[in-house]
Length: 121
Image (cartoon, rainbow, N blue to C red; front, side):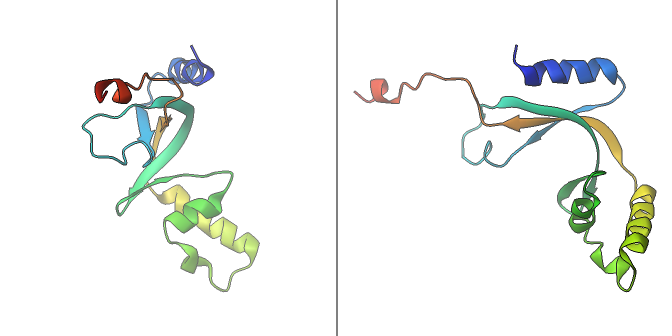
């Protein structure tokens, strides 16, 4: 069992009440087949919400990412950096967030046999 799966199982055990949400990157579903092959990537507990058509994650360590994703830059015009941080943090705290175990779904790391050449021989 790889480390990503072990981490996921540990997070589920530590946070049994949180939903588990797979997050799939566009490189996984960028073709026209009905099913896709992928691997479990990093699992982490994060807060998330929907804004328009986007899923936005609450980035506590890098709040500017969250602010940019929610298009909130205009809220702090004319304020100092400290005032901006305080205002934006307060604003973000008032929004509704879902805390969940996020599982990043990534490009497969297993070697799947490719029979294309055999079939077309």
